[in-house]
Image (cartoon, rainbow, N blue to C red; front, side, top):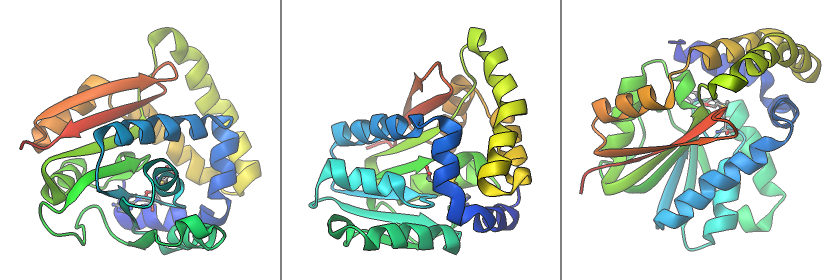
Length: 233
Ligand SMILES: C[S@@+](CC[C@H](N)C(=O)[O-])C[C@H]1O[C@@H](n2cnc3c(N)ncnc32)[C@H](O)[C@@H]1O
């Protein structure tokens, strides 16, 4: 698994162009994925949410739009230039002024035990230096009965795989090189996507970490999956 320092430096290098590259490479479907994620969080009905690996903050902003001002929302990330992007965007919207963006490494979260109703993490788990350590750390900070929502790339439906892997290998690096000027960051992206577990395997890893129940939902031919994992009451 990738070393944390190298991951943080890589995101620091593309922070200013991260959003545009994201929207270009996904063809804009990332907006829809965040909508599905935040709807699931809304259905759970938390009174506080921490968005881990928040990056430039788009999940935190969408959570605020959907959950309203009464729900406390905090974004944590270990890459300050990505957090600066989130803070810059927050400054342009009065409705987001109470959102907190702070440094936090998922391997050692700056949060007390049993303190969080819901944790979201979008495109972050794939980058963990030690996946089991990170998942157990999330379990520690969730309150009993709290839920974790993981939005992450998955292994797509079998019929769609040839098209998808062609896209990852030939088109994504080209578009990324033009959009960000850093082809290597997106070679890394393609590699981590190809090697990421299936829905079933990630569900198993969540259970091994100690979550009581896990439900996985494939979205867009299972290019991505959202895992909702519950801590025991
Ligand atoms: C692909 S971006 C995702 C950003 C955002 N969640 C989104 O959906 O657009 C991955 C983010 O995870 C952060 N990250 C990776 N590993 C982390 C860790 N161990 N602790 C905190 N942040 C981490 C990176 O700094 C980066 O901002």
